[in-house]
Image: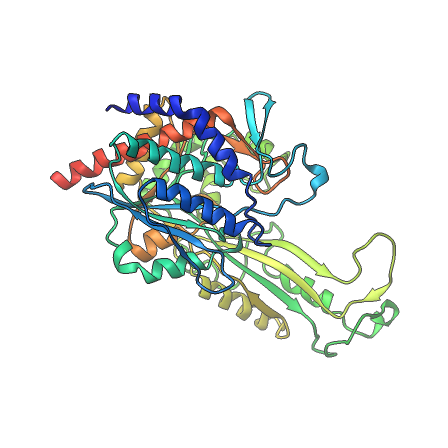
Length: 470
């Protein structure tokens, strides 16, 4: 059977596939609350059983959300890891949703035509469901070109705990895999698929001030008139976090840049190619901005985006924040910070340098509370998994943009850094409003995603097979 015939088979099955994907999407699977998590894991286990897989639910702790694992033996000479996530962000303000957040409602939306609105359809349960249904189509037709180890986690939105423990437990087995794949709706607002060769890491922590050098912690708020001679933990924290960046909000933490690696020759060539079509104002417009804070040529801006760390304040909490007035001096302040790290940087070293930086400036009372973090990940454009991803997009008439890195973060470090297994995958399809009200995916793109999964796995088997025969 040819690729064209497999794509036609997906066309014939599409109504059934769309119905099943909507069924999966209607099950809530909210990381933070646990709502619908177990039911979603069981539903995905049912899908794996149809593929001939014996599903395994793995929890790192009693409180962890289950990872859905299992092995598909297709009798192929190549074995791949498949990563997906079934958990989603909270719904947020229901009043801001035009349709039920777990209703899988299909409506018309210009200029896309039909779109499906649902929490998690774009990030990333829609593509997960489509990927599994594409594999089922190949299996039913006896055309599955690779064996698969499934790694489908249910706590990615919380940083993930079960996944790294599961990979660690099965390291000897998984490190024998030939490649790893993950598929998303990867077309941007211009309909161009974007393939990223790497992802920045994310170091997330709270900085907490609940005492000061001249006073100690207060039991509760005191009247703000006492500020003339009582030191404020809030001001201490504000000055502390201000020291982390310069006037242009560029990181100036002592030693933070010491281990940053320069881009490779391949990376520079990719940036040079991207720069020819990159318009900073258009890019800013997609985020509702007038301009970007960074200045320079398109090539300089792309290098910053891909290969420079950033320090961001995600939230600030202190004292009275309601409407109206209340004159108080708060006893405690907290800032939630994330630092995006690039190749050469490590999580522990980044945390250490932040605290040493603050202590050197006299902020010894500031405490750090850590979370589960992601290291950076990076693969070469020369890997078969990437070549296959690029060629798959071209097969479908799309010339992809290949980015050396993206500033987002995901647990792909487990593949390239820990298991030493190269990863790839892109996927046709388009959507938007991830984590926001009215999250959506374009229905036509959802079907195209399934076809592109088939094409990518076939192309990978072709590339890797030729290499094995040499």
